[in-house]
Length: 293
Image (cartoon, rainbow, N blue to C red):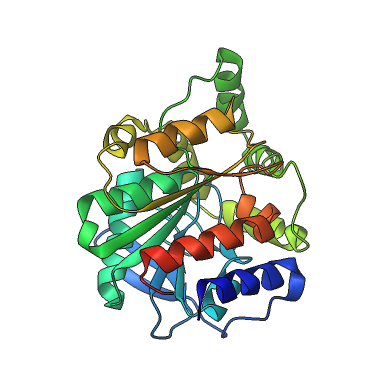
């Protein structure tokens, strides 16, 4: 399929004509300290592994998964440590550890090299996987990437401490999560919210999330400029995770030697808010990185 055909398919799909992907069931990969949950469209196409950000589920890729599968890719989405159907309790919740989980999964599938998609915190996981095993990663797509420490004001730090301190912690996180969609919410947003709320109420889930939030990203920032795999940076211009999301995207793009794709008006989930704007750039990048034309 030509690149032009892929772009036309992306525009058609993201406009609302998505067809379902093959019915898949949750699969598990046993690791030394827990089990990793994932799903897999199967097929013989190039592998795309999608990793959600902290405080969310692998279903956050539900708008991209069908169009990537229809474009000929094998799409695998995984739940990160502490989240979804992956085990809640781990000895390490860092971006580096999640990146190593991704590499273990790629090796298990025997389908590499892969293009890894990472949203928010998991953008760092994609970079770590590429850093530690570049032969297994042929490209990274960084969506709303959080790869270095910010400097929140004291009142923001206090709000987080209070928000996670009591029985209101799930409601606190969901209120924050809702704010990450400033432009529009997907049609199935209420269903996704209910699923996320139910998951976060399970034992250990909020403790894992709170631990992740507290982990410094200084180690991830240190490897950014050393990355040598092709990269695509996608940032919403109204991403509330950053004081200046455009400046952050330009900084990261400059470090990686790529021009960022800015999605006007989108927040922290541009691939859910405005998939029709993300899809053309994503499919064009995949065609180059995965060697498909």
